[in-house]
Length: 139
Image (cartoon, rainbow, N blue to C red; front, side):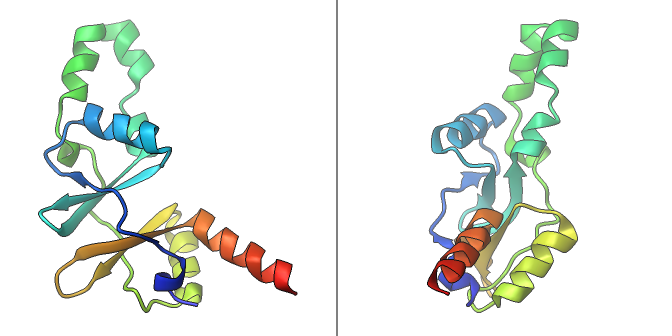
């Protein structure tokens, strides 16, 4: 089984200059925890719910007020996203995907075309668990 077998194809992405508020709204609307960040078609980063959680919304509101939070949420995604992004190719084997997820303690891995870094899919730990569940049910 490979990444192309497991991945969600053509995942929703966000541009690096989108605001944190736009990205956060998109994540809540789609009920996702990870958004690949792109410039054009090329993967340049990953935004996770952890990155947004690092904004410390409650602290900002109580200590600095709504204006500070509003200014923070207008910042571009590029200022908060992870830039050291692991990526897989469509033919990456399941065992290698699992090793990446576990070793690097990430919840999702974008699947890209190596030559262009164009994102073609995303594999989350949930996708891996679903594959194992299906395998167990066929035994």
